[in-house]
Length: 478
Ligand code: ADP
Ligand code: MG
Image: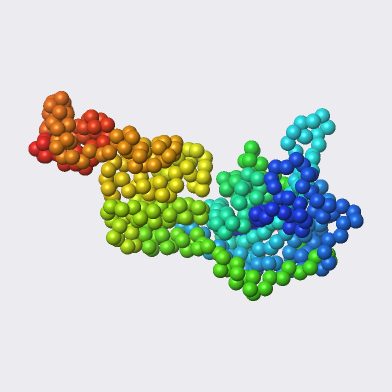
């Protein structure tokens, strides 16, 4: 029997505001429990809020919600419709959005440390109560865990890109609930969904969905039926567990909040926000591919965050401004872009990765990186690629104030491109390695590389490799 997987995601993005959605209390992360929960956030008796509202009350009981209802938007959300375009190994796909609505967050249950006590307890921290969220709800358009991850990552990039959410998943500022169901291939009707909560990384999201798909198929194949319920993902056991049966919307007794005024967004406001929007990741990626002929995977890497895209473009602009760099007359400057992409993604990327830091905190600025790139192969050719990587390490460490020119001079790294000097070293290497030369002459190509290696060692890696290659071949009579 072949099964089709159906997934819809609800994503809570914590908006990067300093205060709560309906009170002035701070949203800062990590404060001692209950020090940032204002009377309004938790509705202490006697508190009144504003007058009228199209915000709705979603009523349910849970210890982290002392008000007994969550203020959300129901009939008229701030956003309806829309879509997100995702790319997977199978190609490009559009996932439709149902809605995006504003709501307040609830508090948090604290189990850690407390459950070890003699009388196991759960603490309640209401600091998070009233923090603004934008809940973005997708249509059930995804058909695999891979598509769900691609969707979640694309959304994650987007909300950080436009600066509405810091995307910190560890702190819970970007949370996805995955709704998963299965149906027989060809069935028109959707299967019963389970909603999985508590997934705080993309890897866990993938595992949770994969586990849940296997579980549901097993249930149905064993002749059972899937119950609509809320399930919790346990990363330690890599399984989902039933948490509670799932309410349907009518069970929440939604009604318009009588205390809040309607949220009014006029045309001028929409236009202002539109005009302020930066170039979005999809558009930037397409432009990099078209203008600079970058490979799709490179364009994707360079637009993984807005800071990366900006860094790449600044480096490119800086490189174009350095005098005596060849290739500059080309416009659009495809060759420059290819080099800069490689340096940003691979070489600088390795340092960022090793130091677990983001490009906005890179100790090497775009101007400094451009200065280094200008010394390499396709440009001035003052240093070899290998030496350039060492220079980058020195720049990262702050040597000579991160100035590539100064480091090259101070360390005496300038590439030897003097044919006479290289020829002399080649002669010495040939004279000192008669057996290897004989091997080469007997047809062993590997021996040639070994001789190149010896010349590079003798020049401390400073000889221009392509010149060494040509001179050595010539002298060996090849
Ligand atoms: P609720 O708050 O009751 O979970 P929402 O409308 O906020 O309701 O979210 C429902 C989510 O479940 C949406 O992302 C939707 O695409 C998804 N969904 C609905 N039906 C199914 C189904 N049969 N299989 C998988 N996902 C589904
Ligand atoms: Mg839900």
